[in-house]
Amino acid sequence: MKSKQLHANIAPPQRLTASEVRLQKHFSFRVAVRTDRERDHMNGEPHLFQQLTGALLRVGYPADACPFVHFRIESQETVDRDYGGSWIEESEMP
Image (cartoon, rainbow, N blue to C red; front, side, top):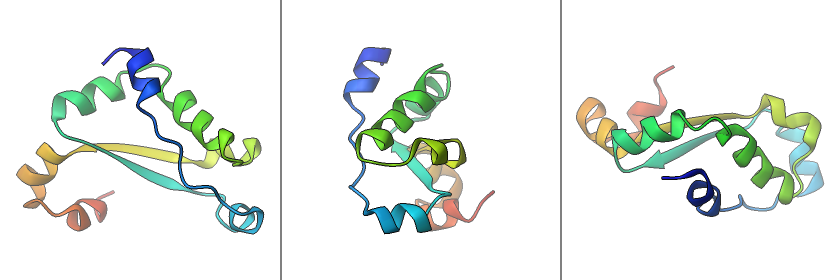
């Protein structure tokens, strides 16, 4: 997936109220993709963090909180293989 395609496929997150943003400074997002190959490609994308935080900024997330946001990319392929298809079990791993 090329960078422009990747950027076009990033859906903005749900809008947050100002009070929710103040309470939720340390967000963590899991980006789920179908295959390990897609995951590896996204992990190699040099501007992915900027693209994802840009989506947050567009919906009102404070710029000073963006450095505290974490994005974890995982594939359904890995979850099926290593966690018996359980995203809950996968989420418990560090």
